[in-house]
Image 1: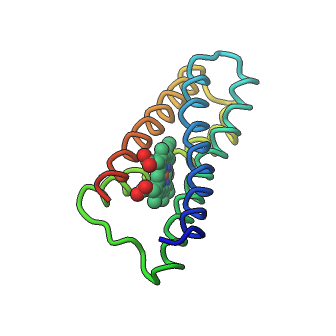
Image 2: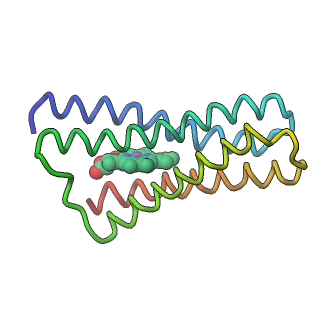
Length: 136
Ligand code: HEM
């Protein structure tokens, strides 16, 4: 692998890692808070985190395609792990978008459930990342 390609993957990985921190830490902190204004600010951060994961995750694939003219040849557990991450990110984006749009009208119980769900999704996604890394 050339230095340029390694540099490309490393730069994307830096962005991807910060996106992961935003989704996991932002969701867990918000699930402990009861202050709606602070939660609203965290919701924006976590949504940006999920979107960052989708964009940077796709960019990993694009860099591979640029250099090899094909996507990485992964199968089995690696594919399952990638699919889990994609589902978590899609649900995360949907939940946070709904929360920012309509959350002000939801009950406290509904808001708490949303933060518990997005925390669970982030933890599942970051755990799946380990399987993708080592089974790819
Ligand atoms: C559409 C969603 C996503 C895609 C397409 C994607 C794709 C990828 C790819 C291709 C890698 C490199 C795998 C390798 O080193 O072989 C990676 C690594 C990683 N991803 Fe994602 N990802 C997504 C979402 C997420 C989410 C939501 C999280 C965490 C909340 C996450 C956390 C990580 C971490 C921590 C790594 C580094 C794993 C390691 O090297 O140990 N990803 N991801």
